Image (cartoon, rainbow, N blue to C red; front, side, top):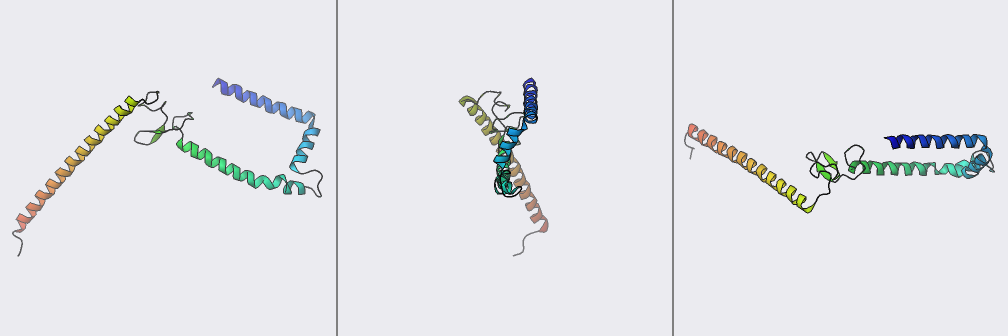
Length: 162
């Protein structure tokens, strides 16, 4: 936090120094700016600007749009921990968050080792097997109750006509 304050103060001081230097001796800066933007020594006012530097404004907007797209793409795959600039490659909370290895709760701030990967894989397989066993139990219970309901309906209606 302190470094950010020092950096902001330094940038503000540099901007103020630049403005003061320009106000005190604006002639060379204005001449350089006029030459490079195309507003000096042309046939009419601003003809040089629109046929030179001004024609690049559309290209600057295209570059800005590309920069914004790249930023959004990076932000999408960025670690969801506030202030972290690492790429988040490890899903957490059922895939709701992408976290880097330093912020993922399973990794405890360390890079994943081979043993850790094997342990987490075995835990995942055990969890998936328990989940599938539970689904099979539910499915078996549902099929059995449907079968009993079907037999009851047939007995109550009597024998099927031939």
